[in-house]
Amino acid sequence: MASSGYAPDNTYFVESDEPIQRMNMRDAAKMIARNKQEMIANELSRLACDEYLEDIMQHMRHMEDETLPDANLIDMQREIQWFMRPYLIDFLIEAHAAFSLLPETLFLTVNLLDRYCSKRVVYKQHYQLVGCAALLIAAKYGDKKERVPQINELNNMCCGLYDAGMFTQMEMHVLNTLDWNIGHPTVDFFTQLVVAEERDSREVEHMAAYICEIALYHRDFVSTKPSVMARASLALARAILGKPEVNDGEWDHVDNVTLLTLSQHLHQPSVTLARKYSSHYYSKVSSKLADFLAQQAAIARRGVPPSPPSEPAHSGKPSDVYSTPHKGLGAVPGVADGYMTPPITPDGTCFGHNPAMIKDYQVPPRRPVTPTPQPSHASSYQQVQPQAQHMAGSSYFDGTTSQMSY
Image (cartoon, rainbow, N blue to C red):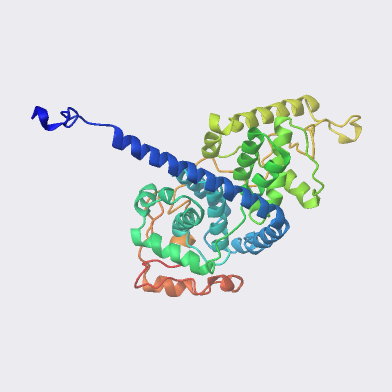
C-alpha cells in the first residue's frame, strides 16, 4: 500500500465548506449582474422619463379626470350615509397597516370604493364588504404578491360576518362595475413628484401624507383631484412645520379653496390615524400637528376679548384670529367645521338604528350581517325613487349564487 504512490486522503470524512463557498460566489456574481442590470434599467428609465415626461403627465391628468368619483351621486345612496364613512376608513387603514401595503394602495382602495358607490346602490350591511373587495383589488394591482391579503385573513378581521365566497363575488362585481378600469394616479403619486422636484424633507412628506389621509374621512374631498390635493397638502404641511413656502407658479383658486378646507378639517382627527402617524417612522407628525393646533388656539385666545361686547359696532381693533402663516391656514379653534367624526360607534346592523331601512331583515347587535335576502326583499327594492334609478342598473347579484343583493 505504501508503494501505491497515493497519499492518504485524511479529509474524506471531513465536511468541507468549498461547495458552499462556490455557491456563494455564484450568488455574488448573480447579484452583481442583477445590480448592473438595475442600474442600466434605471438610467434608461430616467432618460425615457425626461424625454416623455410631458406625455406621461398629460396621460396622468387625463386618468385622474376619468377616474374621479362623484360625491353628488354618492349622496343619492338610500342607505349609505356620510357619518358611516369614518368607521369604514378606520377599518381600511388598520387592515392596510396590518398587511404592510404600499401607501398608494390605501388611496387606490378608497378611490375604487367611492367610484363603485357612485355607480351602484349599496346596502349598508355590505358597505364593509365593498371596502374589503376594493382593498383586495388595489393590493393585487400595485402591491407585492406576498403582501396581498388572503380572503380568510380579511374575513377574520370582519369577525367572520361574510362567507368566503362573497369576497370573490364582490371583487368581480366591483371590477365589472368599473369596466376593469383600475388604474388611478393617486395623491401619493403626485406628492412624490412634487417632493422630488422641490427637495422637501421626509418630515414634510410625512405631514402631507397625514393630511391627505385625514381628507379620506370627509365628503368635501371625494371629488378633489389628486394633483390638487398633493399641492395643497404639501403647502399646508410646510406651513405647519415652519418650512419656507414654495411658489411653483401653478397655484390657482381651486388650490386655495382646497387648502383652506383642509385646514378646517385638521381638528379632531381619527384616533386610529393619529396613532398610526405618532411613530418615529412617520416623524411623529400627528403630535406635531396637535402641538401646532394648540399653539394656534393659544394665539387665538389672546386675540379674543374676555367677554363679547353687547354692540359689535364699537370694536376698535379686529381680533387676531387668523394669525397662522400663509394662505389662510387659520381656523377658529373649538368650531365644529365640516363633517366631524362621532365619538362612539352607534349600535345597529352596521353603524346605526334606522327602522325604515332594516324592516326587511333581522337586526343583530352592533355588527353588520349579510343575511340571505327573501324573494320579497329583492322585489321591493326595485321600487327605488326616480332620482336613484340610474344608479341601480344591473346592481343585483344572482340570488342563486351570491346570497346578497346590491
